[in-house]
Image 1 (tube, rainbow, N blue to C red):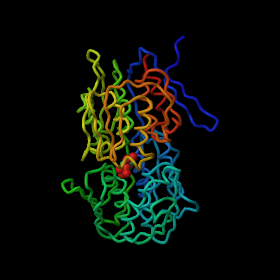
Image 2 (image 1 turned 90 degrees about the vertical axis):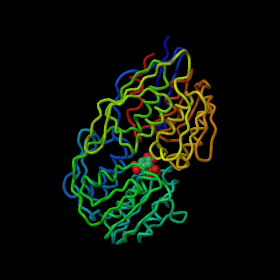
Image 3 (image 1 turned 45 degrees about the horizontal axis):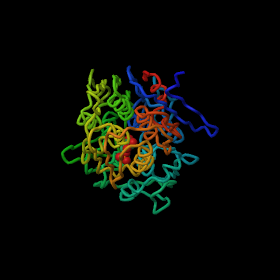
Image 4 (image 1 turned 90 degrees about the horizontal axis):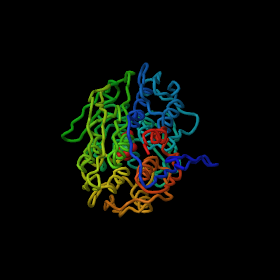
Length: 456
Ligand code: S3P
């Protein structure tokens, strides 16, 4: 009897085990994949639509848990946001400076982007009081990176551990502009300050050590903000007070979700996949550069510009030559890190199937994501038999040790759950991924797609 390759087992507490059972002959992957909308762009479209004048229309919104948290927060502050769906979401914006004081705590769930970007808007609403919180993971993630610059602008924010942990209380103020030299390359920090700058008289300026994703800049310009970007000095500035106008936004597919299929297609022998409609904004394409450096065969097809963001279909193949490992090891660090930060868990899986020693460094930020992604990936891949060691700011992976199916855990981190699933496809025997439901944070249809493209 042929055992099913993929089963999803829902438990009494509603958590799910994803069981992937690979027999000796293995699977290959083929077909075309449509990925969900970009998470970063989805959050920004909901937020800017809420604070703009007039109607915003969003097509292709991500229907994951994170954007749902953003929509719930902004509905609670007066924005009329239609039911969320991928075809069309309409928002009746309430205009700059008009967020209403919510009658209850705003809950950002698992979403750091919701909480950090929103703080910039809340802190700059004078005379209004807000309380914000999140789930267990979010309440342990550092907020001082946005609280400190907001305090320099005159923001009043309180929370546990010297105002660095949610729940946070915010008393909105008239802020003053600053030039903030951020110690970390973080689009959330940059966007939070720029959002606060929208309501602040004068020029608010942010300089980053490396360029982080620029979706806020692109969208703020489209909505009519007075924004200047200087890529040479990695500086962005906004002049406050200019009303934003509702826009039509088309959200491209999320390259961070595409990354699971790109790595799966690159390491699973005999595979060929086309991932359609992927956002290929250069501040996000570090994963394509890294995989190409490792020798993966990835082709960009049908390149186009959709509502200000570059988009392409990506074709990936894995042709294994006389039993050799499909990829070569590489060293990843420096300026590329912010451009592939969310893809490092799946890149670690790619490195397990690469000849030689892959080093990932300058990525200490991974320790403060939805989980400590360095420790968790090293522990879970080690359980499966990988030769991987933890570095303070990354990991070192010696490719080539075969993986064995076993019991692993997502630690409720969506990107860990999906990375382990791709590792499991290339392990022998049965892998059980505990708390796999975490995938729905950014990719609700992940398991269905996985089932569809697997050929036994
Ligand atoms: C995001 C920025 C990144 C990324 C996160 C989404 C954004 O975080 O890891 O998933 O939408 O601005 P940092 O700003 O902390 O680097």
